Image (cartoon, rainbow, N blue to C red):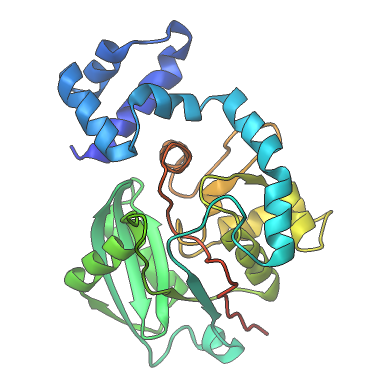
Length: 293
C-alpha cells in the first residue's frame, strides 16, 4: 500500500466517523500504522499535520475560502495573471489540435505513454512531440482500462511505452518547487472544441490553493448562463491535474464529482490548500497558446 492509498483510507474513515472527531490513534489505525509513523508519513505527504490537513477539507473552511478568493480570482482572470497572492511554480503552454488532427485521430503521430506513481496514486501519462496529451489517474479500471481510454482519444496514433520518460515527466508535474527556484514551462497538446478551450484556459488561471465554482467559470468566459456546459467541459479535461479541474466545486461548497474519484479530489484539494508550495498552474504571464476550429 502506497502513501496515497493510506491517506485515501483515512479520508474514507473520516466520511464514516467525522461526527465522532477521531483522534490521532484512530486515524493511524485506519491507515494501518502506528501513531508515530502515521503522523510522520502524513506530514511528509501533505506538508502539514493530519489535523491541519483535515481542517482544510471542512465544509465551512471551503465556503469561507470561496468568499475570500472571489475577488482574487476575478482579478486574476481580468488581468490574465495567476493571481496576486500566490505565484505558480510552472507555466503551462497549451496548444490545441487542428481540425484536421482532430478528425484523423492522431494518424501519423507517435505518443509516448507510461505509468507512474504520483502523490495521488498511479497515473497514466502520455505525450507527443508537441506536449503532454493525456493524464488520468487509475481508478479501478486498471492499466489496460486506462490505456484503452487513451486509445479512444487518439485511435489512429502509434503508442509507444516509455515508463522511464513518463517517470521523469511525472516528477516535473507533481514535485513541488523549492522557494527561489524556477522550472521550464510545461507544454500540453490537447483535443477540444473552442468552448472547451476557453473553459480550460480559465481553469489554468485559478491559483493553486484557490477554488472556484462552475457558475463563476461560466461568468469568466462571458457565458453566465452556461454553467452546465462549463461543467461538461471541465469533465472532458484530458490532462487531469495539469488543467486543474479539481479546483472547481459547487456553489454550496461541496467538492462534487471528479474523474479520478471523489476521494482523490479531496486529497488533491487538501494537499494544495494546506501547502505553502504550489502545484501546476499558469505563471505570471499568460503562457497559453490555443488554436481551434
